[in-house]
Image (cartoon, rainbow, N blue to C red):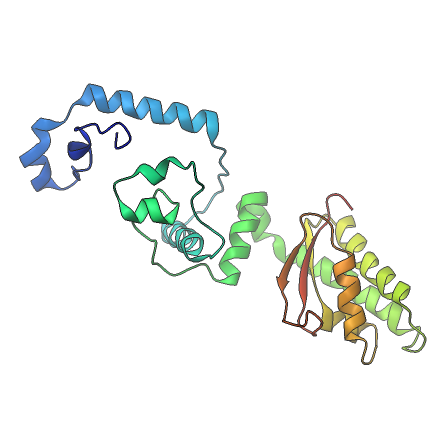
Length: 238
């Protein structure tokens, strides 16, 4: 309506959930026009937008995750409206500047790392799988431990770059075999598990080499060669 300079916008923007506003301005509502507008919006959403729905049992948790997702997107420096986003025509600055069709929650508390992992898991597997996730994580840890023990048995001398590549690949394949969607690896853990000394730059370089399109660097440093480099490797296409 703002794009078309429709004068009904002034009525549409009134919060009719407020009883005083409903009493004072309710007679201005054009139900036919609003129904037509809602149908047009619904058609646009069906034709142009995809959604992911996931279950959250507790209302308090649903509200918290909703607030956290909105705030996380609003605060992330890479998030913003595209040049052709319809919201740029909104008369509300909170919407036109944020890239979100929201006014509430923009300045809320962003998701914690744990909450973000919960959202990712629920979106892919749902609540039941999340509740049973302890067993899956235990199996991943056992797989990692078995690889570490095998490597430690060979001793720390004479390890080559190929040894590092094979070790990382074995971790990836072990996780994939037990049904994991991804695995997070940390450079310092690999360095320690392989019993290496002063080889962190090599470990980090090979970790980066092993990345495929879609994999994520969850943590890095200015040098990119520290013990805290953390990379998420997705396993579906490996």
